[in-house]
Amino acid sequence: MARRGRPTVEIKLSGTERRQLQSWARRHSSAQSLALRCRIVLAGSDPELSRNEIAGQVGCNPATVTKWRNRFAEHRLDGLIDEPRPGAARTISDEVVEQVVIDTLETAPTDATHWSTRSMAAKHGISRQSVSRIWRAFGLKPWEIDEFKISPDPQGEFKG
Picture 1 (cartoon, rainbow, N blue to C red):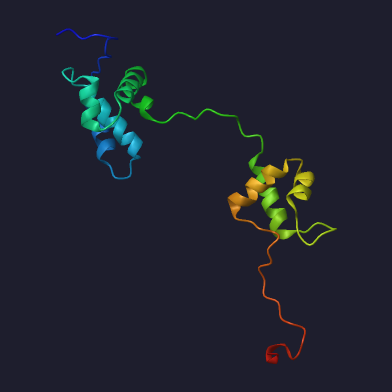
Picture 2 (cartoon, helix red, strand yellow):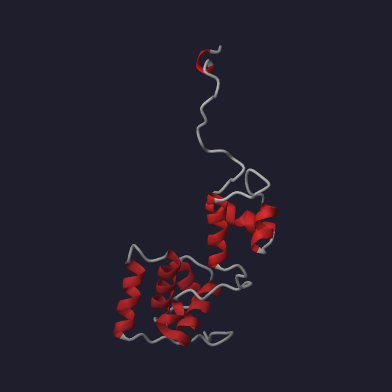
């Protein structure tokens, strides 16, 4: 029976590539996504297996088999490594993030007891939402007091 659809990319592995793929697929410290890709390519090197059979064997979608088979054919081993994700580039530098954290922990505004998101944002020229995200990422809550205070009342302990 003749195959229908797009022709399948043929994968021929060198001995070095086969050993590297088997190593990545078996290694415990490999990311599971990389191990799956290696198993797809190793199974894809057998011309007798269809993409549906490979998908059933490794436990993924047939479209995933096609994607990684094609990526390997084009870029070889380097094609199996994750590429940068799409999205907007960062607009706040690491230096600004560091300065926000330092200011939050070590300083206080002149007119208040602690920083607010708005006052910190105005000081560093970023949005208050950005300050909030930075504080959340570092677990900072400048409005909470985390120090022990002794009562000035000499009878404080004995009051009931």
